[in-house]
Amino acid sequence: MVWGLVSIWRLFWDYISHSKPEIGAAIIAASGTIIVSVLSFVVGRFLERNKEIEQRKREIEQEIRKAYLPIYQELIDFLFKVIQAQKTSMPITLDEMNTFFTDFTPKILVWGSDRFIRDFSAFRESGIISVSDPTKFMLILEKLLYSIRYDCGHENKGLEGGDLLALFITDVRQYINK
Image (cartoon, rainbow, N blue to C red; front, side):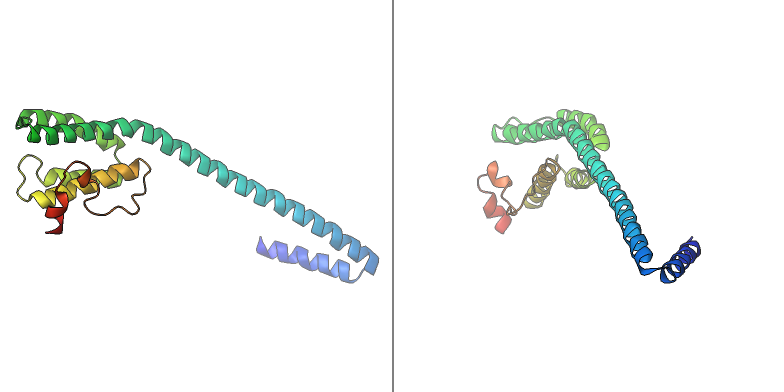
């Protein structure tokens, strides 16, 4: 194809260079107009296609977000229920926790982002039922909450360790700073 284009260019150049200057100038002007028109069309279609693809990606992301937001809300509600139960000395039973996580895990397998699944797995591994290191557990919980916020479209800029936990654990800074 390159050889063909080079051959055509040589023939074109030979013809122009051996013709009258007025005819050569007219051919160059007409050729330039055609080339610019074709390039404008091709580049315009390329940019339009990319814009359509980006728009479609945004629409898909919005549809996925609509599906996983209720699932994330379900987890947040359960976590706050666990925290509230601890404060009222009426802890949630092991069966209730197992039931929740058994029902919840298949949902996030399908709808959870990669980041959320990684952070949720770390949260589960850290031992929600028997916490050996409460500070480490709180930081892992906060990382999970940041993942949820990120998936919901928040950038979490300017937030630091403890900022989310401080919303429901009043003395969290004492533990984190240690």
